[in-house]
Image (cartoon, rainbow over all chains, first blue to last red; front, side):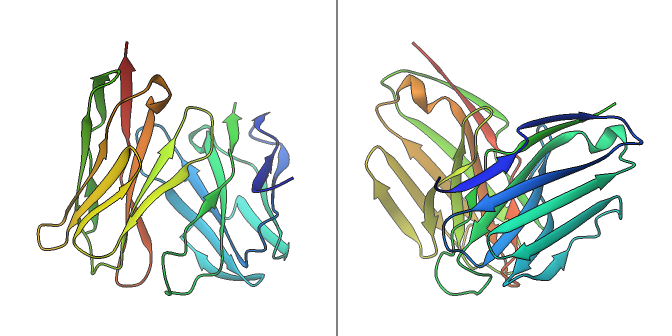
Length: 116
Length: 109
């Protein structure tokens, strides 16, 4: 496989459930990101990891818990979510988080989350 | 605050040309990006502008004016497969990406 792969593609969960989203990249990148995409709104950055270290937590509620065991894998653990958390969750990777060059983000296709 | 403005939706005809505008007010500037996102798919990188002027890549071109806080994406010889959302993003002085809400482009035969 190449690129950035996200699983599951679709997830429906109740407010009391615990579930996890998984992201895997095969690009040799060192930075990985979680974004939230809601209809007609700008992408919201949630978390950034660079060389497995969390470098950004954008005031995200604690019901979202990221995990980055290595530079190729990123998880988003979900518990006691609210209906307003329903959205598309996008994972992305880039070479790193340095300021040199374009440092283009490569995105996965996203996990569509519905919270009932 | 920081802000990126782009039209919510545009419609164009197959074979024609369309220009999608993006204006920004950010704390500093370290490059502007355009991404394409088909429904249900990953956003994919189209272009990166850091200096003023026009960058051309096949049927797609991107223009930047830093003094005006303005960019546009020009799509020529439109094809049905160009129906997608187009996302504008600016990297600010802290190297954070500020995103627009995207422009949904509808191509009609």
